[in-house]
Image (cartoon, rainbow over all chains, first blue to last red; front, side, top):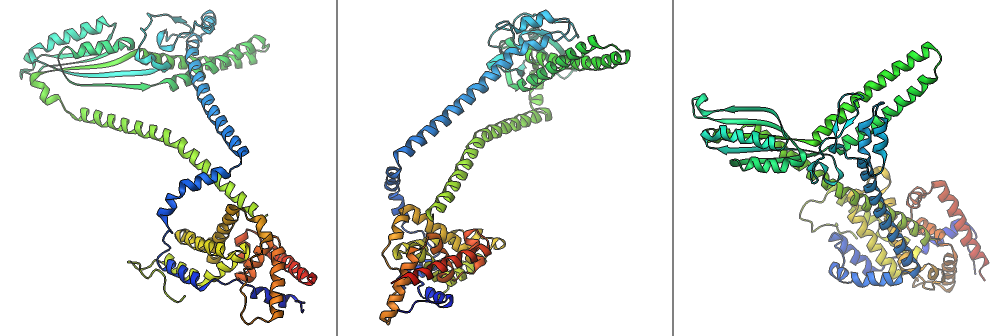
Length: 376
Length: 178
């Protein structure tokens, strides 16, 4: 028997070995191509899917099942542990919040006390002295349930109450507003009362800008609402925890730097060196003072809630009910709600999308690997 | 295969449809030949060929001419479908021992010609699957070395080297045959 002796002949013979499709198959494929390759037996395929999945699961070796279950369990445990750790960190940040209020060099004793377990107080539970070196003062404790203290978060809250009353009663209602504010240890930032007779057109209204301790703001707003017909009321909150935590961190760093400079100052021997360090120290103290002032403002924002009360007499209420300011307020509120919903949506969808992406990448890599193995 | 594909379409076929039509008509038999040469199983090769064209049809709008030739793209899809078939059936071990002869038997074959065909078929069966795939792509599907390199993800020169080695193996097998 003659065997191929040269490549050309061998290649020719190899080409002759080329498999050719059956005519029936070729015709059927052409037909399907003409029809745009409709999916074959989609319904049957869907119906057979459970059986196919079961068959695949049965084909998986028990070792792989155990490994997969183990990996899944570890992942769940890791996620739970991560969430638990994050929660603990947040709690510790809040519990250590009181330390920064005693940053001044003259308040070492208070600082030490703050660091004792169980002694630390939340930021909004203390009055902050804006004076540098003034130390801390303990104010009356904010009752539990304060909106600003909820869930260890530092929350700023404000309310707007729009009340309608008979025009003649506006001055009396205004007096009751002040009484309610006083009764709740509130502070009157501004107040205007306009009586109908003065205006000469039977219009009467009153406006109050108040600061009410956050722990009592709910009770106070309820009292305001009962003074007349509530036309509108809006309560808003703003979480300032992150801002507060960052400020505390910066203040802590600033204090550490100041302490370091003081230590250097004690050891310096030359005038020039001492002057340089003193200059840095002055700068650091200014920074510390600035941070304390910021913490003070944040503390006040959390401790005292702003409450706007507006009273309109019958004659003025219809005209004053809606203005550009009100419309802007409502629009701003709507935008804030929409943004909040979008952020929450992203917070939910983002991790899920990331997991799906990782799973898809893993599957792709596994598929590529198993295809390579199929030929090895 | 002279009919125009997508004739039933209500709208005028897009450029992608027309290009796919041309690709299908020019490559149908080549794809089958490659897949059958790799799998050495005609029914499976028909199934995989159909699957490959289905996948390619659904992905036709995603084909980027700047990333390679249409035939290389199509054969890449066909290769994945064939490898999926190999994985699914776990036929790797069986393929080596596969006794099914995928080769068309000529009706006018002489005894000598038949014997030569059988000898070559055995030589191909003894090749490593990767080498058999190269032979199938080169001599059954009639792809150039550049296209083969694109399909397999290797360089053109590497294709040449491997092909030479595979052909040498076939020749050695034929020379060593009784």
